[in-house]
Image (cartoon, rainbow, N blue to C red; front, side, top):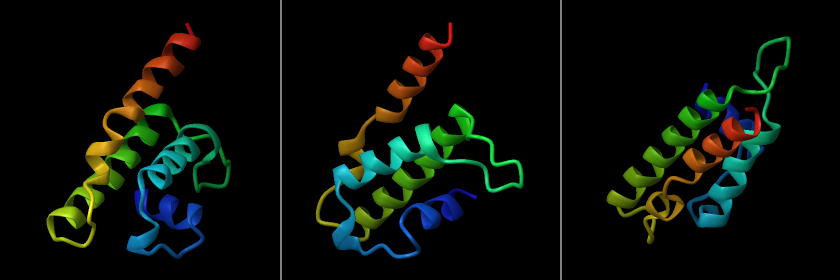
Length: 94
């Protein structure tokens, strides 16, 4: 499912040259604020699900860097950004 959301977000196309920190931050923002489940009810993704999908995205980035497909380790640049958003969303709902 994580890949299906990524594919939907990027329109089915993404090159290694497009993968930057900013690209990752925009994808994370999409997952946390605008993405919906791919089921008929179209509910917003739960924060934990969005975080899990973003973690899968970072894992792929890290592997691509280790395989020398990326020049920079974008996954480490993104750090714990998604976890920080999870904290702020749980604090704002309290």
